[in-house]
Amino acid sequence: MRARLVVVWNILKVWLLLIGGCAALAAIGWVLGGYRLASLLVFFGALVAAAAYWYADRVVLGMVGARELPFGAAPGLHATVQRLAAVAGLPKPKLYVLQDGHPRALGAGRGLRGSAIAVSRGLLSAAPPAELEGILAHELAHIRNRDVLVQTSAVVIAGALVELSRIGGWMQRALLFVLGPIAAAFVNLLLSPKREFAADAAAARLCGSPHGLADALIRLEQAAHLVEFRANPATEPLYIFNPFAEEGLAALFSTHPPVGERVRRLRELDPDWRDKLRAA
Image (cartoon, rainbow, N blue to C red):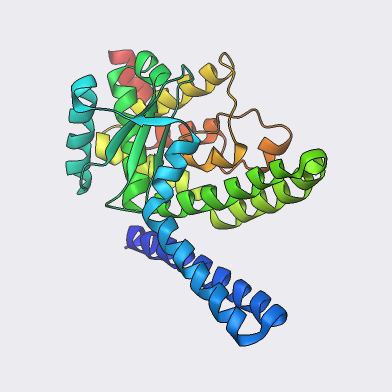
């Protein structure tokens, strides 16, 4: 029941975003040109929203430099995603790869269909099978809960605001000082850290154990201190953990709870794990 409420709330947030955006455009049009301009701007807003719904996942994957991963290039990975998706009751999402060595994963899309999971070369080379399975299950949980729909919408809009500051020339820093906090506030308004706790718990159920994901989170956090990472900070909500150094503009976009708290909650799902480890 709770999972269904999460899905409904995520869909409702996107509808509220659409209605709010169209209402803002209507108000601007009414002030500047009356009913005719207001109608045109609302129609334009609806077209942009429709395009964003169908193509936002491609925009986001393009922002992070992801490329589709053919089945022949990683049949084992495709098979793992297919199996976990079947357990979760989902169609298999498309798989993409990030060519850099920073270990991370992300999910993007619009829900059960039209979604994708991207993993980096660094993650594929560093994560053992159990940890990789936990990470994939986490991203599938985001797809099932429709978190990806809200995350993708928020990242596209926030990313556009951040990039808009680049057209300012000598005013770029001033524009970023204004638009950056607005974009960050928008992201934090739409996205709650609780979504990560829910996806972690769902991933543990899909895998039959919370420890693969818990170990993966620890490994990813440790690796983040060793490999430099640069990207648009507005993409932070997409990743399985926050890969950015929490300073400057990037600190404003942080929507993930601390890794230590996530690991603690995962371990508590199997309170006898220390005894099992000693027995092994």
